[in-house]
Amino acid sequence: MTAATEPRRRRAGERPVTALVGLALTAGIVLLVLPLLGLLARTPWSRILALLGEPALRETLRLSLLVSVASAALSLVLGVPLAWLLARVSFPGKRLLRALCVLPMVLPPVVGGVALLAAFGRRGLVGAPLERLTGITLPFTTAGVVLAVTFVSLPFLVVTVEAGFRGLDARIEEAAATLGASRWTVIRRVSLPMLAPSLAAGSALAWARALGEFGASITFAGNLGGSTRTVPLAVYLELHRDPDAAIVLSLVLLAVSVAILVGLRDRYLGVGR
Amino acid sequence: MRPRHVLVLLAVATAACDGGASAADEPAVLTVFAAASLAEAFEDVAAELEHRHDGLEVRLNLAGSHTLAGQLLEGADGDVFASADDVEMARVVAAGRAADPQPFASNDLVIAVEPGNPKAVTSLADLARDDLVVVLPIGDVPAGRYAAAALERAGVEVAPASLEVDVRAALGKVVLGEADAAIVYASDVAAVGGRAQAVALPPDPAAGIRYPVAVVDAGRQPDLAAEFIELLFDDTGRDLLRRHGFGAP
Image 1 (cartoon, rainbow over the protein chains, first blue to last red):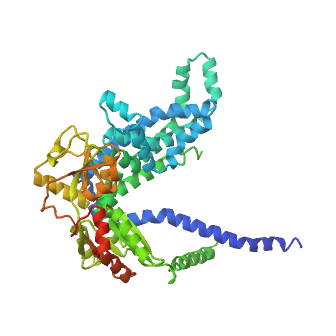
Image 2 (image 1 turned 90 degrees about the vertical axis):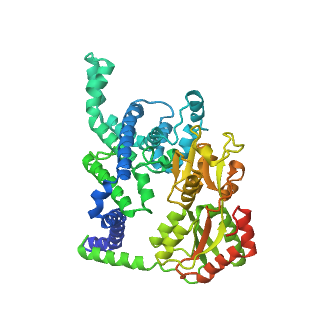
Image 3 (image 1 turned 180 degrees about the vertical axis):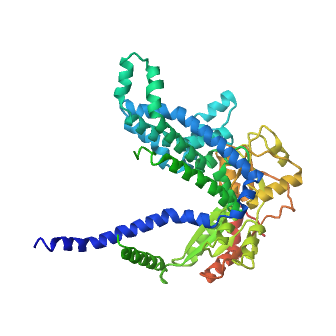
C-alpha cells in the first residue's frame, strides 16, 4: 500500500456512509418540517380573523392564557428551590430524586392524568381527605387544570434552572458572604440576578409546555367550555366539527412555540451557550 | 455533500416510499370502525368471524362515532363502519364512502351511578340537583345528542361538570368515583360489570337509539365485510348483541 492510493480508497469507502447519513438527514428534516408545512397549507387564511373572533374560541384562548400563566408562576415557585437542591446540595438518593423530577417529561401525559386522579381525585390519596376536611375537589375545576399542566411542565423549568445554577460561579456568592452579606441578601442581590437568563428561559419553556398540554388535563380535569377547555382540547374537539377552527387554533399554538424557541436562542434545557 | 448526491438521495427516498404495497398472500385483515359503545359486543362478533375463517384477523377501531366518521372522511382505511346514530353514518354516506346502511341494534339511555346508588339518583330530574357531580358525553357524539335530547324532553336543565369526548369516558368518570352520575347507554353499564349501576329511565319511544352499519368503499374486503354485517343479523350475532345489553333494531 502506497501513500498515494490511501486517501482515494478511504474516500471511496466513505461514500455509502455519506449517502446513508444524507438520507437520514433528509428524512429527519422532512419528518419534522413537513407536518408544519401541511398545517400552513391547510390554513384558511381568509377566515382567521373571523374564526378567532368567535366567542367560543376566544373563551378557550382566554382560559389557556390564564391557566398557562398561573402554571408558569407555580412552576417558578416550586421549581427554583428544587433546581437549587439538585444543583447545589449532595445527599443520598439525589439521582433518584432528579429522575423523579424529570419523569413527567417522558411519561405519557394521559398516564400523568391517571396518576393525578389517584393522588388528587375524589378517591385519591390526598383528594379524599381534602374533600372530607374542606369540601374542595380538584377534578373538573380550573385549579385542577393548572395542577395537571404544572405536573407536566414543571420539569422543563427545573432542568433549565438547575443548569443555570451549575453555570454560576459559587465563588462570587462566597465572596459576597465573606464581605458580610446575609444569606438572603446573597440570594437576592447576587444569585438571582446572575440566574435571570435561566429563570427567564425555564419559565418560558414551562409556560409554552403548559399552553400545549392536553392528555393530563383532559384525563384529570375533563372538558367544559369556560372552566377546563383549553386550546389543545378545543383543537381536538373542533377537528371533526370545524377543521378550519382547529387549524387556526393550532396555528396560534405553533406561533407561540416558535416565538418562544426563537426568543430563547438555544438557551433551553441547559444546552446552548 | 455535493448537489448530485442530494438528487440521488431524493430518488432513493422516493423509490422507498413507493415500495410499500402489501403482498397478496398475507393473512386477511378486516378493519371494522365501530362506535365506542359497541366495544365488547363487537369483540365477541369479531372472535366469532375469526373462528369461522382460519387466518382471518378482525381489527376493531373503537372511538366516538363522530371521530370515526371524521377519520373516514379524511380517507382512513376501513372495511365496515358501525355508527351509534344515523347522523354520523349520513356524513360518511354523503361523502360517498359507504352506502345502504342498515340498522342492526338498538340501545337505551340510563343514568350510571356508583354501585349501591349512594346519592339516591332515581330520575333525570335528579341530575339538576346541585349536590351531584354530573358528566355527560359531549354533544358531538351520538350519546351526547341523545342525552341532551332526553334532558330537553324531560324539561331538565343540567350543569355538567364535564362534557366527555365519548360515552365510555363519561362512564369512566363514574367508575373512577370522580362523578356521581352520567347519562350513558344501558349496554355501557353492562360492559363494566359491577363497577357502576344503571338507573333505568322510563321507556322513551322518541329516543330512537339505533345503530346503522354499512360496508365502507365496497373495496378491499367486500365479501368479508358483507359477512361481518350478515353475522350481526343472524341468530348468533343477535344473541351476542343481546347479551351485551343491545336490543333488536
